[in-house]
Length: 281
Image 1 (cartoon, rainbow, N blue to C red):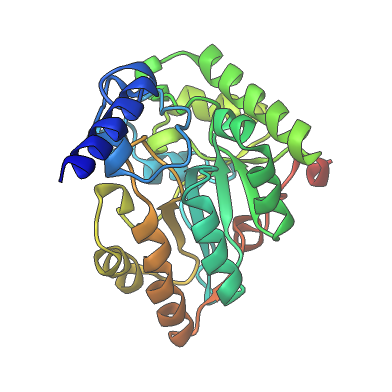
Image 2 (spheres, rainbow, N blue to C red):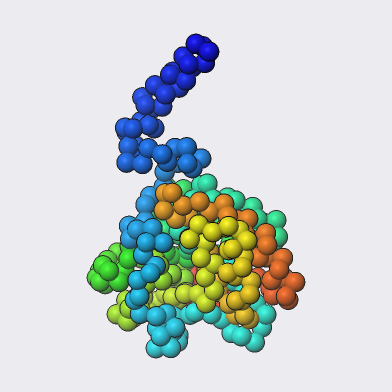
C-alpha cells in the first residue's frame, strides 16, 4: 500500500511539474488532460465554440442564395441522386484521421473546409486530406464570427491568409469558401465574389457540434437528405470538442444513403463549379 501511495504521489508531482495539472499550458482547464486523450492543443476558434454561437440569427443563407444565385450555394441540382459530405474546422490530428479512415474504407470523397491556422499547425495532415482525393475549401484563418466583426477588411485578411497557407502547403488555391458558423451578410458576399470564391453553405446540418451520439447524428442526416444535398459535419472544433461520434456516424450514414440510391461526390462536382483558382482561369 505504501508503495502504491508513493507511486501515485510521484505521478501527481510529475503531472504538476509538466504543467498538466493546475499550472502551465493547461492551467485554465485542468480537467482537459484526462477528459480528452488529445495529442496536441489546436489553435482555437476565434469566434467561440459552435454551440455557443450558432443560436444567433444573421442573414439566412437561403436568402443570400436567392439574392446571389451565382455566388452562394445551399444545395446542388435536384435532378440527380448525388450528395456531398463536407467537414469544417480541421485539420485536427485527433479526429481528421478517424474521418479520413472511414471515408477511405467506403471509398467516399469529402470536401474539407480548413482553418488556415490549423493547416499551418498540421501541414502533413493537410497534405494527407488532399492526397487521398478529397477536396479542400477555405474556412478562414482563425474562424471569426464575420457578422459580429462586421469588417470587410477582416474577411479579406482571413481569406487571403488562408489562401496563401493552402497554396504554400498544397501548391494550389482553393476557390471554395465557407463562412465560420455560416454567418455572412450582403457586403461580405459581394466581397467574396470580387475575390472569385464560390460560397458553400448547406441544407442538411448533422448538428454534430451539439455533442450527440452517432445514432443521433445519423438521424439528423439520413431522413433529411434530398438529391443535391450538401451535408454539414465537422472534423474539428473547440478544444473540448470530440468528433469521434462524427466518424462513427459516417458508418451509418454512408451505407444508408447508398441504399437509398445516392452517390457521394465533392462539392465542386455537385455544383459544377471550379474547385481551384487555377481551374477557373
